[in-house]
Length: 496
Image (cartoon, rainbow, N blue to C red; front, side, top):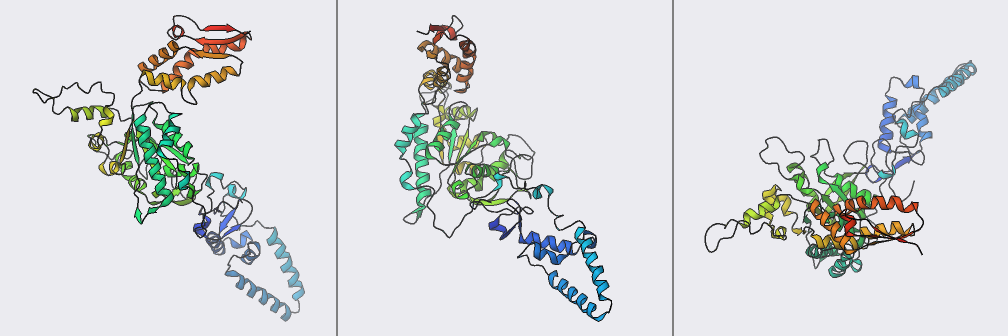
């Protein structure tokens, strides 16, 4: 086995740190001393011991270091046989009979490994995902996150600007929050003042870039990231993923290195789907109960996490992960939250000089920026849950100008991806400004954010990408606004 990983018992699935010294049968099969002793005791007490032909004294030879209480008894029986051979004149004949009996027992089927799974004996019991990297608390290893390696907020935002278009306030909030969090992780305390953890709640319509910003942040910081879907989580004991499975995903992303996972980021998407269901009398096992179960994770606690699985059971090893230094970012679209904000802001609407018009906030694009914790509680999130997400990061819906910028400006912009694909066929692809505006206008009508851009381009690029490989004379293709609107075709240029 790799020395970097802990051994896992093939029977009880406890790790080396929990179960103690392991007996290695081969490269993949390990048995802890507790399971080996229990199995030996079971065999000694079995009424089928004689039929199985297992001599308990042989276990000490097969498995050195294994304490076997029956060895002394076996030695006494051997001494009695030798004494009886000396006393009886026909001891030679009896000795021959005993030899024959011993040969028969040796040829009989062994029962010493009947308690093991056949798959374990074939060497397939330990999935690589269930190997846990060793931790040595005595050694002073290098910290995972160093203070000098944490980029300052302005540098982090500048890096985000290369990938994410718009969302200036959100990028600023996230840059400062992440910078402060990893300063806390790197230093622990400052002048004996313990810094509290600040988790983040991201609010924004679908397709505005919530998941994309978090992915980019994790890539820039080079820390493990786990993205979990809150809709799959249920209360413990019900069908679905346990709440601890979000930490289990982070552990897998960190290559089962617990120290590295404890400095990672967990993004829980669709968190608005956990809101309390109004006017329900039955137990809400996938809503309010999950919010309550996540409280200890958000605040920071040592929890038992299944390794390589999404639920706790006897067939997977467990390890302890401290969530104190894990940054939790929860994101959701929160549909109809704008109506709650509007009703709060329009309370003074009516007749009079100081009254507001009821439709004053109907077309306000920055309405989500006026959100308060009371609005989120009214939406259905419990106060204890909202209190553990002190940083609220609202995102704007994308307008037509932002969609045009998303098409062409980021490092991995959609247009650059298609230009690269056609470049492999030695064809230059161009989009004029009218085409970009037409694509952005169609995407805005779909009201699904930036996700609509690729669907629209795929539709109009299908015929072009099908026909171009047929003709080697094509050198350039220019997409026009008329082609996007169905009034004309692309401009084809011949190779010179």
